[in-house]
Each structure stands twice: as structure tokens, then as C-alpha cells.
Image (tube, rainbow, N blue to C red; front, side):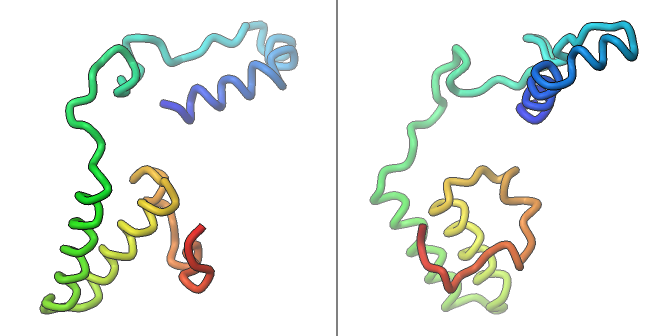
Amino acid sequence: MQIFKGFHRFLQTRKAAQIEAAFGVRLVCPVDEFNASRHVGDDSPAQLPPPTPERVTEFFDFLKTRIATARKYAPAARDYALFRTLYHAGLRSEECAPLDRADVHFGRGRG
């Protein structure tokens, strides 16, 4: 939904006059309270608190152990790399999904 809202803001700011002149209609945001997704900050309490640093460390230790004991190395290593990328880059899963292997540069370190 954020993509639609952002695109609408872009059109409203940069192209509203041209759209109204060409089509005779004013832009109205297609996202309203009934079809917008709800977020934790949108009047709803968080279901779970964020994980503590200790819990995050436990999670990554578990993934490392899984790499060492996995029957197939590649999927376990991929999962570890994916979660590390998400965590250190602050990405959401939907932001990470379209990444290609060439988009991730492990040699550059953190940050």
C-alpha cells in the first residue's frame, strides 16, 4: 500500500495539473481506511515486543549451528545470509524479496 500512496503523492505533486488537463479528473488517493493495511503504529498495540539483543544473538547462533549440522550447506548458508542482510540493513522482508545475488556485496562488511 505504501507504494500506491507514494506514487499517488508523486502524481499529486508533480503531474496533477497535466492529468486534470488531459483527462478532466482530479487525482484521488485510491487507498482509504477500508483497503489500507494496518500497521503496529496505527492504533493497534504490538502483539509482541521487539526481540532483545540477547534473543537476536541466540537466533543467529542457532542459524550458525544449523549451517554446521545441515545435510545441505547451501540452503542453511543462504538463510543465514538472508537474515543477516535483513537485520543489519534494516530491511523488511518485502524489500528484500526482489534482491538478486548481485545486489548483496559481502566483501564490503557491515554498514
